[in-house]
Length: 228
Image 1: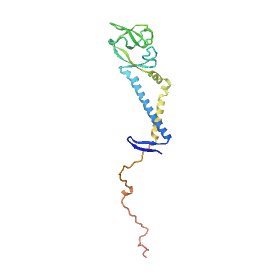
Image 2: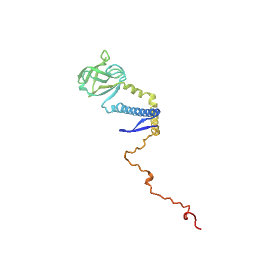
Image 3: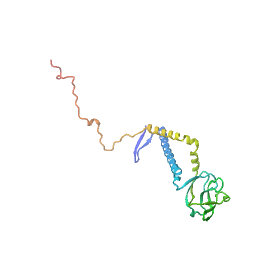
Image 4: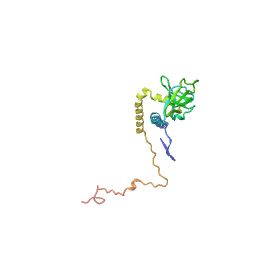
């Protein structure tokens, strides 16, 4: 037995069997989680997958703890272009090591010198006791400066790029979508019975029909007998 009440937000559920309430709660929670997951996926696609291609910023996953506690392993840092002539000591930049391997690093500038060919810099990680053992030269109109980190996002991106998930991810998404569609189709819909406003007149459907008289055709003679 389900009871409804008319309130400021429409018909509200007053009482229902516990299994019905649990089922409705599970459906509502699943719907919210589905929309949340969809929203996070869209944000990741736009912010990490497509946004860096505009050239306005780039994202990099931190692979070591040399810059802790400014940012740590597993964080994603967001860097934007900074004019090279505005580069100053204390800024954290992204550049390529001038040694074999040419790894990309994000360290803080601790010394710089400008010359006709660009800028010479020394860098150091905040967690390192000493400067990096090289002098790097920066050339070009801009350099990538780290603006802020997104904590732990790199772990999520690495998980999303895992091989089994990439293989079975589309099938999993399709299965979830199919289950959601079936639930939407077969979900029972309860509508409260129409309520009559105070003072309203209720007219029987029979009152709208014209008067009908039924005449028997079984006897055509006068009452009491038949003519011979």
